[in-house]
Length: 207
Image 1 (cartoon, rainbow, N blue to C red):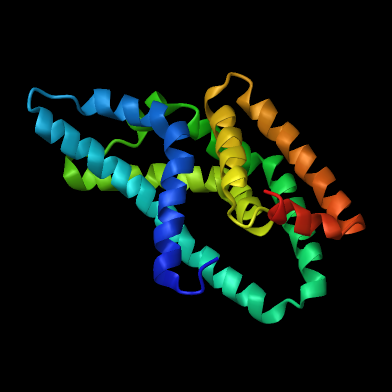
Image 2: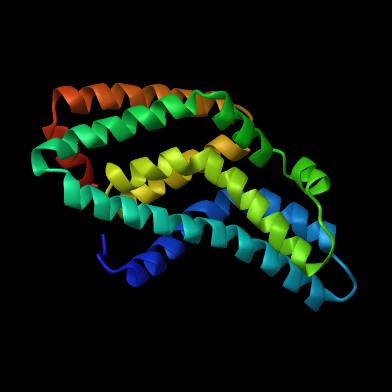
């Protein structure tokens, strides 16, 4: 992970766009159809603002990630880091099973309902709508991103795995159940890493 915040945020934003936009496409397409107008340029502008605001939420979350990473580097001795990874896996697994996760995921899985109930007029409204959708998405996926950073060290294979999990959760009919299965797997992984700390290194080193 880059120690300078500028390059890190650039990398983080690109990775979040690549990982999150595929699962956000149903919402983006519903929004685009909703704002469709004879003036195509204006429609594209409104959609672009919506998507930009959505990605902006994920970009801003990178500031928190960078600060926590710097804090971790400063206070965690090397021998304790596998147990920190186990803690992140446990936290993420438990969160996958919570009502808050289910509620946020439910919003992300219902694009038409979200657009209809959170609609705001004008270009400023597109920013607000994109930010609100981004916050629900962040509420849904922050724990998986914590796993991506802590266990996967932001590796490309981990990025693909997390992106696939998020996509299945959001678009597959049994996505909610799948998310709970993922939660159980993360809890099991936390126990395994706690018992065999060397696994934490292999998670990031091999992936």
